[in-house]
Length: 126
Image (cartoon, rainbow, N blue to C red; front, top):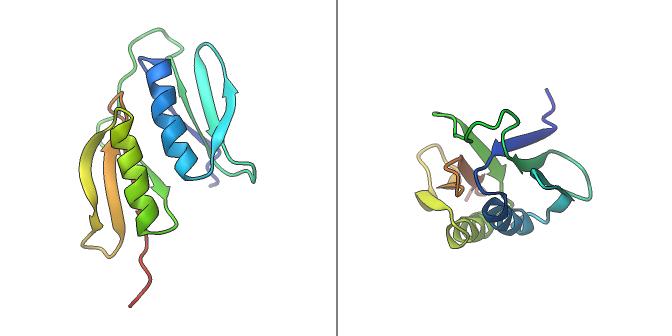
C-alpha cells in the first residue's frame, strides 16, 4: 500500500509552518502549497508528502494517542539535525537521539500541536 501523504491537524498554522519548514528542509523538502487553512510540503522527486491543516469540522485539532509518524534519515547526523531542528522550532523531546535496543538509531519528538514523530536510520553493520 503506497502512502501518498500524511496530514496533521493544527491549532496555529503559522507556528506549525515554522516547525515543518525546518523539519522538511533537513530532508530536502519544500512547500508545495500554502493556503489560508492548510500548508503542504513535498519533494521534487515525488514520494509521500506532509501537510498541516485546520480541521475541516472546525473542532480543535488533537493528536492520536498511540499514533506516530516516522521519517527515515540518511544517517545518524541527519537524525541529530532533525531532532535539533524540531526542538528549536517549538517541538518537544520524546526521546533524544541514540541507538535503540532493536538496532536502529532514532530520536523522538512532538510537533507544537503534540503530534508524535520520530526520525531514524539503520546504522551500517560494523
